[in-house]
Image 1: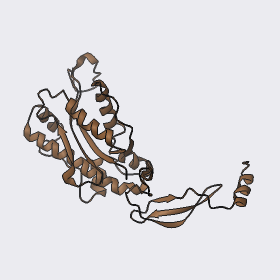
Image 2: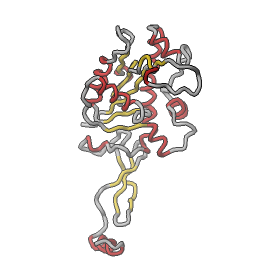
Image 3: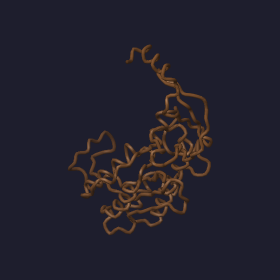
Image 4: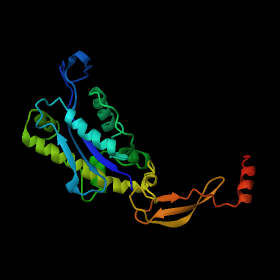
Length: 261
């Protein structure tokens, strides 16, 4: 058994409001004409083929603001997942979904751990940009974030909300592409990530890249311990054994030397 890792991405409708101008607007609640909701989502299980990618949107909804079917679909996947993988999902996707869940009277999905590639990029690197477009352009070779030039900028969202089926097809392609490029991006960043220990979901040690092939690579030291260090044969990520290899006398002398009893 290994962790079930769900890669997913959301697209939401904008808030529609009555405004007095283009700049420096302080929009009050009574100026809102229509609140935001889900437009679409795309998801796949990490490692599954491209043909297994899942997608739902509002193109056939009688009321585009009623996203209950989309919410049930993604809720079921989150409830099944051990880990979710997103780009900036801790700040956006997860919170947006949870807001829609509670507004629709839904209970929380089963607890899952969250890997966020944007968070990994911020923590470990100094990239020019941590956006998916930049990271996938620089790091990915097969899948890169698409630019929806046919419906540039906000036009894609506006046309989808107006019922333009051609725009919906572009949205589907765009949403699915984000998931595929995100998955590839994670394979590049996984050796640097220690946020989730995937070995707890398996009887054998599992690296963040998914490999179980480790080789000994010297030792790791703390102020009171010496531990066998291993490197993943596939990506080079390092892990260490939890057994302190120092002798009993050595452990005792170190505790005395550091003032510990």
